[in-house]
Image 1 (cartoon, helix red, strand yellow):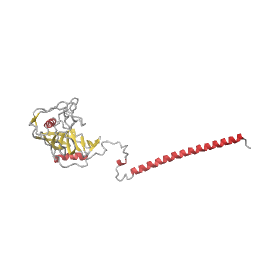
Image 2 (tube, rainbow, N blue to C red; image 1 turned 90 degrees about the vertical axis):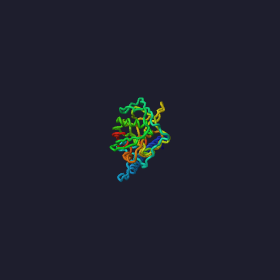
Image 3 (spheres, helix red, strand yellow; image 1 turned 180 degrees about the vertical axis):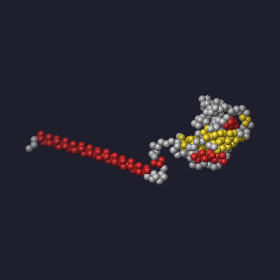
Image 4 (tube, rainbow, N blue to C red; image 1 turned 180 degrees about the horizontal axis):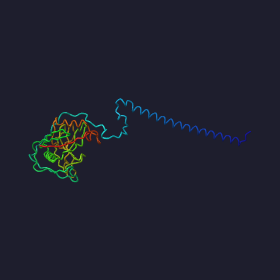
Length: 298
């Protein structure tokens, strides 16, 4: 007969074996769980890869398979350009002043503090400036002549400045740095020799606007940076924009001329090539470089 001590020792050994067996089974279950998880992940990745690449040789857009949270790194050379969905063909009516200006006006072209001219130039004459009649400006853009009619009766100080800059060669060999292609704003912006969008002639002048101004295809207007908070005056300089399509803008931009349908054709071709958007969709540098070789007025 086994003694009580022997029975206790036998029970102890049995318990130890049971605990060891339980630990071994638990270890095996963990291994199986890990293996199953790995296999499952691999299978899921494989399915995703298959779904993402199915039809890849049949014309599927490769960009469609990219994760929206991790877009591929691109450069301007391989980024698809934003192009206009459509371009209106009807020319906008050129605004008319509700009250005509006197035959001659005085203008003011104060130097712009801390903003020297992007290209050496002198400010224009500012006394006794004609506010009557028109003149023609011929912009050679990418080898094509684009003729614009400048209207002194609309904006005599603006036309005076543009004419002065053109005659000094300020616009020659400069780039048009901005193209917008959205339905609400379709313009080509030029007139900055620095090509950055922040350059100017070293002086500013006030807006020549009125509430009845509307913008649309064929309108030539000045770009600006809003009112100067210190002087409450306009911030026009040398940058201007050509509206080749629609332009839903408030009447805060001086209209100083217009371009007819035939002369807009080169601008339409530039717009159709699209823009490489920077910050906002349909707003950036033109996909194809746009250069103003010369601007002649007379």
